[in-house]
Image (cartoon, rainbow, N blue to C red; front, side, top):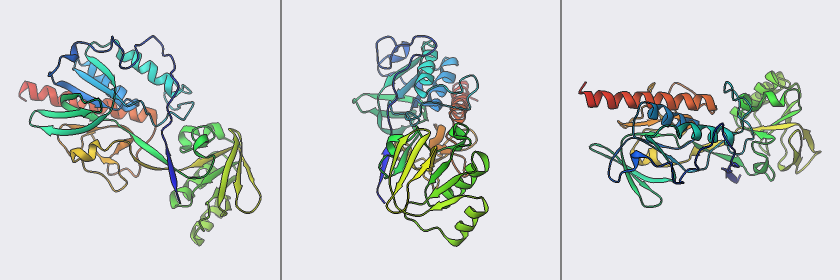
Length: 340
């Protein structure tokens, strides 16, 4: 089964107040003296990275936020479960966050990508794609994950707009619609049962040519979930009115589709630095967002506690992870400087 990944770029949107674009004159501040190490470099500018930079900047730390410009949630028109911002577009939320950061003179935001990193006695050295080299005392990785979609014509084009990966993020908008879940692994079976329990009494699992086990069939039947095992040939239509086409049998009209994607790390920096990973590829962190490498923190959906079964992909939990990483990075800096 061939697969394809998506990392669609969002359209620019205005925030609550005007902010300079990343990389334009005016964002570089007193932090930019050549050779001076930053207190904190944050790699990645999704919710986790943006909030880590905000918290660090408010403590008057010298901060560099590096943004590759490829957020995971770019395909989605809306974000949810964030108080006072429920339904905001991801692009509008990022623009508002950059406007917030512009108020803090010690925070520099820069468009770019970190291609290599190594630990030094006094911190870390980062190499950027444009050849610049930066140094920092603490490093917060918030580089996120990439969704890898099953290769069905029409699915990638509708990902985030009619085809969804998360029932917490998008289930409410699909309530009472006829729904499909595309996938055949145990997690997809569980996803089909969950959306049938929460959002619709008309749910069909489409396994794309894979034959479920007798146990899986029994679980689906118990939840009232229908089953289509034929190979999918395409997904067509618009959000709210999709059609799944199969190599055999009749088409299936659905209001929305859920698909639990495979994921992989957006960046290899954690691996290059020697950070321990969990079996699912997530970076292992502790309750302080610390990785196994001293001085390196990880936040957002790229990392999780070993006790959790999956990384959470919510905007609000990513922002919380970023705040937690920034607080404890700051405290490590404070204690080191104070000799505690």
